Figure 1 (tube, rainbow, N blue to C red):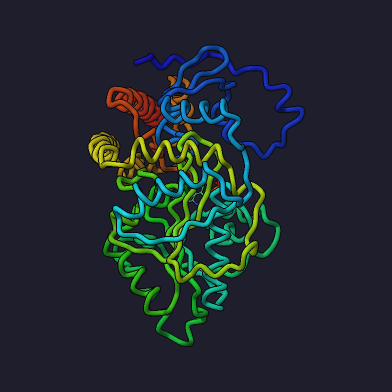
Figure 2 (cartoon, rainbow, N blue to C red):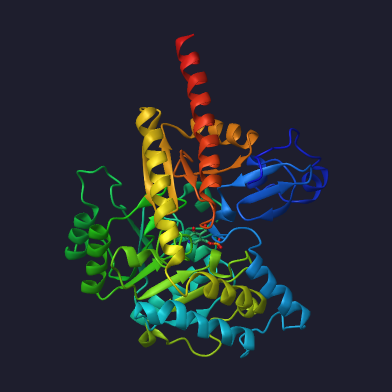
Length: 436
Ligand SMILES: Cc1ncc(COP(=O)(O)O)c(C=O)c1O
Protein backbone atom coordinates (compact mmCIF):
# COMPACT_ATOMS: atom_id res chain seq x y z
CA UNK A 1 0.00 0.00 0.00
CA UNK A 2 1.35 3.49 -0.87
CA UNK A 3 1.60 5.93 2.02
CA UNK A 4 -0.69 8.95 2.11
CA UNK A 5 1.72 11.78 1.34
CA UNK A 6 -0.05 15.05 0.60
CA UNK A 7 1.94 17.70 -1.19
CA UNK A 8 2.49 20.74 1.00
CA UNK A 9 1.54 23.67 -1.20
CA UNK A 10 -1.49 24.59 -3.26
CA UNK A 11 -0.58 24.79 -6.96
CA UNK A 12 -0.79 27.75 -9.28
CA UNK A 13 -4.48 28.10 -10.16
CA UNK A 14 -4.20 31.23 -12.32
CA UNK A 15 -5.87 29.83 -15.42
CA UNK A 16 -8.76 28.36 -13.40
CA UNK A 17 -9.24 31.68 -11.63
CA UNK A 18 -9.05 33.60 -14.89
CA UNK A 19 -11.15 31.38 -17.14
CA UNK A 20 -13.39 29.06 -15.15
CA UNK A 21 -16.65 30.00 -13.47
CA UNK A 22 -16.66 30.62 -9.76
CA UNK A 23 -19.39 27.99 -9.39
CA UNK A 24 -16.74 25.30 -8.91
CA UNK A 25 -16.67 23.98 -5.36
CA UNK A 26 -14.72 20.77 -4.71
CA UNK A 27 -11.47 22.42 -5.81
CA UNK A 28 -11.90 24.90 -2.96
CA UNK A 29 -12.07 22.05 -0.47
CA UNK A 30 -9.18 20.11 -2.00
CA UNK A 31 -6.83 22.73 -3.49
CA UNK A 32 -4.39 20.58 -5.45
CA UNK A 33 -4.03 19.78 -9.15
CA UNK A 34 -4.92 16.10 -9.61
CA UNK A 35 -3.41 14.07 -12.39
CA UNK A 36 -3.85 10.35 -11.76
CA UNK A 37 -6.00 7.87 -9.92
CA UNK A 38 -5.62 4.19 -9.21
CA UNK A 39 -7.85 2.09 -6.97
CA UNK A 40 -8.51 4.08 -3.80
CA UNK A 41 -5.70 6.56 -4.51
CA UNK A 42 -5.59 10.00 -6.02
CA UNK A 43 -2.30 11.62 -7.06
CA UNK A 44 -1.60 15.30 -7.58
CA UNK A 45 0.76 17.02 -10.01
CA UNK A 46 3.41 17.47 -7.31
CA UNK A 47 3.44 13.71 -6.60
CA UNK A 48 1.20 13.88 -3.52
CA UNK A 49 -0.82 10.71 -2.77
CA UNK A 50 -4.27 10.82 -1.16
CA UNK A 51 -6.68 8.14 -0.03
CA UNK A 52 -9.98 8.79 -1.71
CA UNK A 53 -13.05 8.59 0.53
CA UNK A 54 -15.08 10.59 -1.98
CA UNK A 55 -14.96 8.35 -5.07
CA UNK A 56 -16.18 11.18 -7.30
CA UNK A 57 -19.38 11.30 -5.21
CA UNK A 58 -20.02 7.61 -5.68
CA UNK A 59 -19.13 7.42 -9.38
CA UNK A 60 -16.10 5.22 -8.74
CA UNK A 61 -17.46 2.33 -6.70
CA UNK A 62 -14.87 0.06 -8.33
CA UNK A 63 -12.04 2.52 -7.74
CA UNK A 64 -10.02 4.67 -10.13
CA UNK A 65 -9.02 3.03 -13.41
CA UNK A 66 -9.87 -0.54 -12.52
CA UNK A 67 -7.51 -2.56 -14.77
CA UNK A 68 -10.20 -4.87 -16.19
CA UNK A 69 -12.52 -2.00 -17.08
CA UNK A 70 -9.65 0.05 -18.47
CA UNK A 71 -8.47 -2.86 -20.63
CA UNK A 72 -11.99 -3.32 -22.03
CA UNK A 73 -12.10 0.34 -23.06
CA UNK A 74 -8.58 0.38 -24.50
CA UNK A 75 -9.37 -2.73 -26.53
CA UNK A 76 -12.58 -1.16 -27.84
CA UNK A 77 -10.79 2.08 -28.76
CA UNK A 78 -8.04 0.11 -30.49
CA UNK A 79 -10.70 -1.44 -32.74
CA UNK A 80 -12.14 1.99 -33.61
CA UNK A 81 -15.32 1.05 -31.77
CA UNK A 82 -18.12 3.57 -32.24
CA UNK A 83 -17.91 6.26 -29.56
CA UNK A 84 -21.43 7.60 -29.64
CA UNK A 85 -24.47 6.05 -31.25
CA UNK A 86 -27.44 8.20 -30.22
CA UNK A 87 -30.08 5.49 -29.70
CA UNK A 88 -28.97 3.40 -32.66
CA UNK A 89 -28.64 -0.31 -32.06
CA UNK A 90 -24.93 -0.68 -31.38
CA UNK A 91 -23.00 -3.78 -30.46
CA UNK A 92 -21.66 -2.04 -27.36
CA UNK A 93 -25.19 -1.32 -26.09
CA UNK A 94 -26.41 -4.78 -27.02
CA UNK A 95 -23.68 -6.38 -24.93
CA UNK A 96 -24.35 -4.07 -22.00
CA UNK A 97 -28.11 -4.74 -22.07
CA UNK A 98 -27.60 -8.50 -22.31
CA UNK A 99 -25.19 -8.43 -19.37
CA UNK A 100 -27.50 -6.19 -17.32
CA UNK A 101 -30.32 -8.65 -17.94
CA UNK A 102 -28.10 -11.63 -17.06
CA UNK A 103 -26.30 -10.28 -13.97
CA UNK A 104 -28.78 -7.82 -12.49
CA UNK A 105 -32.38 -8.23 -13.65
CA UNK A 106 -32.85 -11.99 -13.94
CA UNK A 107 -31.21 -13.04 -10.67
CA UNK A 108 -33.45 -10.53 -8.87
CA UNK A 109 -36.63 -11.50 -10.67
CA UNK A 110 -36.94 -7.99 -12.13
CA UNK A 111 -38.42 -7.31 -15.54
CA UNK A 112 -37.69 -3.60 -15.84
CA UNK A 113 -37.34 -1.86 -19.17
CA UNK A 114 -34.16 0.20 -19.33
CA UNK A 115 -34.31 3.66 -20.84
CA UNK A 116 -31.01 5.32 -21.71
CA UNK A 117 -31.37 8.97 -20.76
CA UNK A 118 -28.87 11.79 -21.06
CA UNK A 119 -25.74 10.82 -19.16
CA UNK A 120 -26.13 12.47 -15.74
CA UNK A 121 -28.19 11.48 -12.74
CA UNK A 122 -30.39 14.54 -13.14
CA UNK A 123 -31.31 13.36 -16.66
CA UNK A 124 -32.48 10.07 -15.23
CA UNK A 125 -34.52 11.80 -12.52
CA UNK A 126 -36.14 14.09 -15.10
CA UNK A 127 -37.16 11.06 -17.16
CA UNK A 128 -38.59 9.36 -14.06
CA UNK A 129 -40.62 12.40 -13.02
CA UNK A 130 -41.87 13.04 -16.52
CA UNK A 131 -42.88 9.41 -16.98
CA UNK A 132 -44.71 9.21 -13.64
CA UNK A 133 -46.68 12.35 -14.49
CA UNK A 134 -47.45 11.16 -17.99
CA UNK A 135 -48.60 7.71 -16.81
CA UNK A 136 -50.83 8.96 -13.99
CA UNK A 137 -52.01 12.25 -15.48
CA UNK A 138 -51.22 13.87 -12.12
CA UNK A 139 -48.61 16.58 -11.55
CA UNK A 140 -47.75 16.39 -7.86
CA UNK A 141 -44.74 14.36 -6.75
CA UNK A 142 -44.00 13.77 -3.09
CA UNK A 143 -40.32 14.15 -2.22
CA UNK A 144 -38.64 14.17 1.17
CA UNK A 145 -36.83 16.64 3.40
CA UNK A 146 -33.06 16.51 2.80
CA UNK A 147 -33.62 14.72 -0.50
CA UNK A 148 -31.12 15.35 -3.28
CA UNK A 149 -31.98 14.56 -6.88
CA UNK A 150 -29.93 16.85 -9.14
CA UNK A 151 -29.69 20.36 -10.50
CA UNK A 152 -31.96 20.51 -13.57
CA UNK A 153 -35.23 22.26 -12.81
CA UNK A 154 -37.45 19.20 -12.31
CA UNK A 155 -34.86 17.37 -10.22
CA UNK A 156 -34.00 20.55 -8.32
CA UNK A 157 -37.66 21.01 -7.41
CA UNK A 158 -37.41 17.64 -5.66
CA UNK A 159 -34.14 18.62 -3.94
CA UNK A 160 -34.32 20.12 -0.47
CA UNK A 161 -31.13 22.22 -0.22
CA UNK A 162 -32.10 25.90 -0.13
CA UNK A 163 -28.87 27.30 -1.59
CA UNK A 164 -29.09 24.97 -4.55
CA UNK A 165 -32.78 25.73 -5.03
CA UNK A 166 -32.05 29.47 -5.01
CA UNK A 167 -29.69 28.85 -7.95
CA UNK A 168 -32.77 28.26 -10.09
CA UNK A 169 -34.03 31.81 -9.65
CA UNK A 170 -37.48 30.51 -10.58
CA UNK A 171 -40.32 29.04 -8.56
CA UNK A 172 -39.73 25.28 -8.46
CA UNK A 173 -43.05 23.48 -8.71
CA UNK A 174 -44.77 20.16 -8.93
CA UNK A 175 -43.39 18.81 -5.67
CA UNK A 176 -44.79 18.44 -2.17
CA UNK A 177 -42.22 17.89 0.56
CA UNK A 178 -42.81 15.45 3.41
CA UNK A 179 -40.60 14.53 6.37
CA UNK A 180 -38.07 11.74 5.79
CA UNK A 181 -37.88 9.07 8.49
CA UNK A 182 -36.77 10.64 11.77
CA UNK A 183 -36.88 14.20 10.43
CA UNK A 184 -38.86 15.51 13.42
CA UNK A 185 -37.08 13.24 15.89
CA UNK A 186 -37.66 9.62 16.83
CA UNK A 187 -41.04 10.20 18.46
CA UNK A 188 -42.73 11.42 15.30
CA UNK A 189 -43.72 8.87 12.70
CA UNK A 190 -43.47 10.68 9.37
CA UNK A 191 -45.09 7.80 7.47
CA UNK A 192 -48.17 8.25 9.70
CA UNK A 193 -48.15 12.00 9.03
CA UNK A 194 -48.06 11.37 5.29
CA UNK A 195 -50.83 8.78 5.60
CA UNK A 196 -52.98 11.30 7.44
CA UNK A 197 -52.38 14.01 4.82
CA UNK A 198 -53.15 11.61 1.98
CA UNK A 199 -56.33 10.37 3.65
CA UNK A 200 -57.70 13.84 4.36
CA UNK A 201 -59.31 15.35 1.24
CA UNK A 202 -58.90 18.76 2.82
CA UNK A 203 -55.20 18.51 3.74
CA UNK A 204 -54.17 20.52 0.70
CA UNK A 205 -52.11 17.65 -0.67
CA UNK A 206 -52.85 17.02 -4.34
CA UNK A 207 -53.12 13.38 -5.40
CA UNK A 208 -49.55 12.33 -6.13
CA UNK A 209 -48.23 10.99 -9.41
CA UNK A 210 -45.31 9.51 -7.52
CA UNK A 211 -43.42 9.30 -4.28
CA UNK A 212 -39.69 9.82 -4.82
CA UNK A 213 -37.36 8.23 -2.30
CA UNK A 214 -33.66 7.65 -1.62
CA UNK A 215 -33.01 4.53 0.46
CA UNK A 216 -30.03 6.32 2.04
CA UNK A 217 -29.94 10.08 1.60
CA UNK A 218 -26.35 10.54 0.46
CA UNK A 219 -26.16 14.30 0.07
CA UNK A 220 -28.81 14.97 2.68
CA UNK A 221 -26.75 13.63 5.60
CA UNK A 222 -26.38 9.86 5.14
CA UNK A 223 -29.86 9.17 6.50
CA UNK A 224 -30.74 5.51 6.03
CA UNK A 225 -34.42 4.62 5.73
CA UNK A 226 -35.51 1.53 7.65
CA UNK A 227 -37.28 -1.32 5.87
CA UNK A 228 -40.36 -0.73 8.02
CA UNK A 229 -40.65 2.96 7.16
CA UNK A 230 -39.83 2.56 3.47
CA UNK A 231 -42.30 -0.34 3.23
CA UNK A 232 -45.07 1.86 4.59
CA UNK A 233 -44.21 4.62 2.11
CA UNK A 234 -44.38 2.05 -0.70
CA UNK A 235 -47.78 0.87 0.59
CA UNK A 236 -49.08 4.43 0.69
CA UNK A 237 -47.94 5.00 -2.89
CA UNK A 238 -49.71 1.83 -4.02
CA UNK A 239 -52.90 2.70 -2.15
CA UNK A 240 -52.95 6.18 -3.72
CA UNK A 241 -52.34 4.96 -7.27
CA UNK A 242 -49.01 6.78 -7.20
CA UNK A 243 -45.79 5.32 -8.57
CA UNK A 244 -42.86 4.60 -6.29
CA UNK A 245 -39.65 6.07 -7.70
CA UNK A 246 -36.46 5.02 -5.94
CA UNK A 247 -33.47 7.20 -6.71
CA UNK A 248 -30.50 4.80 -6.72
CA UNK A 249 -28.07 7.21 -8.31
CA UNK A 250 -25.86 7.29 -5.22
CA UNK A 251 -26.98 4.12 -3.43
CA UNK A 252 -26.94 1.89 -6.51
CA UNK A 253 -24.23 -0.33 -8.01
CA UNK A 254 -23.55 -1.94 -4.65
CA UNK A 255 -22.87 1.16 -2.56
CA UNK A 256 -25.15 0.21 0.32
CA UNK A 257 -24.65 -3.55 0.06
CA UNK A 258 -26.74 -5.05 -2.73
CA UNK A 259 -26.76 -3.85 -6.34
CA UNK A 260 -29.86 -1.77 -5.56
CA UNK A 261 -30.43 -0.17 -2.18
CA UNK A 262 -34.13 -1.07 -2.43
CA UNK A 263 -33.29 -4.79 -2.26
CA UNK A 264 -32.19 -4.37 1.35
CA UNK A 265 -35.51 -2.74 2.19
CA UNK A 266 -37.67 -5.34 0.47
CA UNK A 267 -39.11 -2.80 -1.99
CA UNK A 268 -40.05 -3.26 -5.62
CA UNK A 269 -40.19 0.25 -7.06
CA UNK A 270 -42.14 1.12 -10.17
CA UNK A 271 -39.33 3.35 -11.43
CA UNK A 272 -35.62 3.37 -10.55
CA UNK A 273 -32.97 5.93 -11.42
CA UNK A 274 -29.34 4.90 -11.92
CA UNK A 275 -26.19 6.81 -12.89
CA UNK A 276 -22.82 7.52 -11.20
CA UNK A 277 -21.08 4.10 -10.99
CA UNK A 278 -23.08 2.51 -13.80
CA UNK A 279 -20.18 2.78 -16.25
CA UNK A 280 -17.74 1.72 -13.53
CA UNK A 281 -14.89 3.78 -14.90
CA UNK A 282 -16.38 7.20 -14.27
CA UNK A 283 -17.72 7.68 -17.80
CA UNK A 284 -21.06 9.48 -17.94
CA UNK A 285 -23.96 7.02 -18.16
CA UNK A 286 -27.44 7.17 -16.68
CA UNK A 287 -30.52 5.02 -17.08
CA UNK A 288 -34.10 4.93 -15.86
CA UNK A 289 -35.70 1.55 -15.21
CA UNK A 290 -39.43 0.96 -15.03
CA UNK A 291 -42.10 -1.70 -15.13
CA UNK A 292 -42.87 -2.71 -18.76
CA UNK A 293 -46.46 -1.41 -18.51
CA UNK A 294 -45.06 2.08 -17.93
CA UNK A 295 -43.14 2.10 -21.20
CA UNK A 296 -45.37 4.73 -22.81
CA UNK A 297 -43.10 7.48 -24.14
CA UNK A 298 -43.54 7.80 -27.91
CA UNK A 299 -40.34 7.13 -29.91
CA UNK A 300 -38.19 10.25 -29.59
CA UNK A 301 -40.38 11.80 -26.91
CA UNK A 302 -37.51 11.95 -24.40
CA UNK A 303 -34.37 12.40 -26.48
CA UNK A 304 -30.81 13.40 -25.70
CA UNK A 305 -27.69 13.34 -27.86
CA UNK A 306 -25.51 11.57 -25.33
CA UNK A 307 -27.81 8.61 -24.60
CA UNK A 308 -25.56 6.33 -26.59
CA UNK A 309 -22.18 6.61 -24.88
CA UNK A 310 -20.66 3.38 -26.22
CA UNK A 311 -17.50 3.74 -24.16
CA UNK A 312 -19.66 3.73 -21.05
CA UNK A 313 -21.59 0.69 -22.31
CA UNK A 314 -18.29 -1.15 -22.80
CA UNK A 315 -16.93 -0.38 -19.34
CA UNK A 316 -20.37 -0.84 -17.77
CA UNK A 317 -20.63 -4.32 -19.26
CA UNK A 318 -17.09 -5.13 -18.07
CA UNK A 319 -18.00 -3.93 -14.56
CA UNK A 320 -21.12 -6.11 -14.43
CA UNK A 321 -19.15 -9.15 -15.60
CA UNK A 322 -16.34 -8.49 -13.18
CA UNK A 323 -18.39 -7.73 -10.07
CA UNK A 324 -21.99 -8.84 -10.44
CA UNK A 325 -22.01 -12.36 -11.84
CA UNK A 326 -21.76 -13.62 -8.26
CA UNK A 327 -22.19 -12.21 -4.77
CA UNK A 328 -18.47 -11.66 -4.08
CA UNK A 329 -18.66 -7.89 -4.05
CA UNK A 330 -21.84 -7.89 -1.94
CA UNK A 331 -20.08 -10.00 0.66
CA UNK A 332 -17.07 -7.68 0.52
CA UNK A 333 -19.27 -4.63 1.08
CA UNK A 334 -21.00 -6.37 3.99
CA UNK A 335 -17.63 -7.17 5.61
CA UNK A 336 -16.04 -3.76 5.09
CA UNK A 337 -19.31 -2.01 5.89
CA UNK A 338 -19.34 -3.73 9.29
CA UNK A 339 -15.73 -2.68 9.96
CA UNK A 340 -16.59 0.86 8.97
CA UNK A 341 -19.69 0.92 11.16
CA UNK A 342 -17.68 -0.30 14.16
CA UNK A 343 -14.98 2.35 13.70
CA UNK A 344 -17.49 5.18 13.22
CA UNK A 345 -19.59 4.04 16.19
CA UNK A 346 -16.44 4.02 18.34
CA UNK A 347 -15.57 7.57 17.22
CA UNK A 348 -19.10 8.70 18.04
CA UNK A 349 -19.05 7.03 21.47
CA UNK A 350 -15.65 8.54 22.33
CA UNK A 351 -16.48 12.09 21.33
CA UNK A 352 -20.00 12.93 22.35
CA UNK A 353 -21.43 15.58 22.26
CA UNK A 354 -19.16 16.85 19.44
CA UNK A 355 -19.97 13.72 17.47
CA UNK A 356 -23.69 13.15 17.67
CA UNK A 357 -23.94 9.75 16.01
CA UNK A 358 -22.73 7.38 13.35
CA UNK A 359 -25.16 6.54 10.56
CA UNK A 360 -25.64 5.05 7.12
CA UNK A 361 -25.55 1.62 5.54
CA UNK A 362 -23.04 -0.55 3.69
CA UNK A 363 -20.20 1.56 2.35
CA UNK A 364 -22.23 4.77 2.59
CA UNK A 365 -21.79 5.82 6.20
CA UNK A 366 -20.81 8.86 8.18
CA UNK A 367 -20.55 10.61 11.51
CA UNK A 368 -22.68 13.60 12.35
CA UNK A 369 -20.78 16.35 14.14
CA UNK A 370 -22.32 19.08 16.24
CA UNK A 371 -21.71 21.73 13.56
CA UNK A 372 -20.71 22.23 9.96
CA UNK A 373 -17.84 24.47 11.08
CA UNK A 374 -16.35 21.62 13.09
CA UNK A 375 -16.76 19.21 10.17
CA UNK A 376 -15.04 21.70 7.84
CA UNK A 377 -12.03 21.84 10.17
CA UNK A 378 -11.80 18.04 10.23
CA UNK A 379 -12.08 17.86 6.43
CA UNK A 380 -9.27 20.42 6.01
CA UNK A 381 -6.96 18.72 8.50
CA UNK A 382 -7.67 15.25 7.09
CA UNK A 383 -6.83 16.54 3.62
CA UNK A 384 -3.57 18.01 4.88
CA UNK A 385 -2.78 14.47 6.07
CA UNK A 386 -3.68 12.80 2.80
CA UNK A 387 -7.38 11.91 2.98
CA UNK A 388 -10.10 13.21 0.66
CA UNK A 389 -13.49 13.18 2.41
CA UNK A 390 -16.47 15.52 2.14
CA UNK A 391 -19.33 16.70 4.30
CA UNK A 392 -23.02 16.17 3.66
CA UNK A 393 -26.25 17.11 5.38
CA UNK A 394 -28.05 20.44 5.72
CA UNK A 395 -25.01 22.16 7.27
CA UNK A 396 -22.35 19.86 5.81
CA UNK A 397 -22.04 18.56 9.34
CA UNK A 398 -21.91 14.86 8.43
CA UNK A 399 -18.50 13.47 7.45
CA UNK A 400 -19.38 11.03 4.72
CA UNK A 401 -17.17 8.00 4.12
CA UNK A 402 -17.64 6.93 0.52
CA UNK A 403 -14.51 4.93 -0.24
CA UNK A 404 -14.42 2.72 -3.33
CA UNK A 405 -16.17 -0.58 -2.58
CA UNK A 406 -13.02 -2.41 -3.66
CA UNK A 407 -10.75 -0.57 -1.23
CA UNK A 408 -8.32 -2.81 0.64
CA UNK A 409 -9.04 -3.27 4.34
CA UNK A 410 -5.61 -1.82 5.16
CA UNK A 411 -6.41 1.24 3.04
CA UNK A 412 -9.82 1.64 4.65
CA UNK A 413 -8.26 1.46 8.10
CA UNK A 414 -5.48 3.89 7.11
CA UNK A 415 -8.06 6.40 5.90
CA UNK A 416 -10.14 5.97 9.05
CA UNK A 417 -6.99 6.47 11.15
CA UNK A 418 -6.43 9.79 9.40
CA UNK A 419 -10.07 10.74 9.93
CA UNK A 420 -9.96 9.82 13.62
CA UNK A 421 -6.63 11.61 14.15
CA UNK A 422 -7.93 14.76 12.47
CA UNK A 423 -11.16 14.63 14.48
CA UNK A 424 -9.29 14.20 17.75
CA UNK A 425 -6.92 17.05 17.02
CA UNK A 426 -9.74 19.40 16.06
CA UNK A 427 -11.60 18.48 19.24
CA UNK A 428 -8.51 19.07 21.39
CA UNK A 429 -8.21 22.55 19.83
CA UNK A 430 -11.93 23.09 20.37
CA UNK A 431 -11.71 22.20 24.05
CA UNK A 432 -8.63 24.39 24.47
CA UNK A 433 -10.51 27.36 23.01
CA UNK A 434 -13.47 26.63 25.31
CA UNK A 435 -11.19 26.68 28.39
CA UNK A 436 -9.34 29.90 27.45
C1 LIG B 1 -29.43 10.59 -5.10
C2 LIG B 1 -28.96 11.46 -6.23
N1 LIG B 1 -29.80 11.72 -7.24
C3 LIG B 1 -29.42 12.48 -8.28
C4 LIG B 1 -28.16 13.04 -8.34
C5 LIG B 1 -27.77 13.90 -9.50
O1 LIG B 1 -26.82 13.28 -10.29
P1 LIG B 1 -25.93 14.14 -11.30
O2 LIG B 1 -25.07 15.01 -10.46
O3 LIG B 1 -25.15 13.12 -12.08
O4 LIG B 1 -26.87 14.92 -12.16
C6 LIG B 1 -27.26 12.80 -7.31
C7 LIG B 1 -25.91 13.40 -7.31
O5 LIG B 1 -25.20 13.43 -6.34
C8 LIG B 1 -27.67 11.98 -6.22
O6 LIG B 1 -26.86 11.72 -5.19
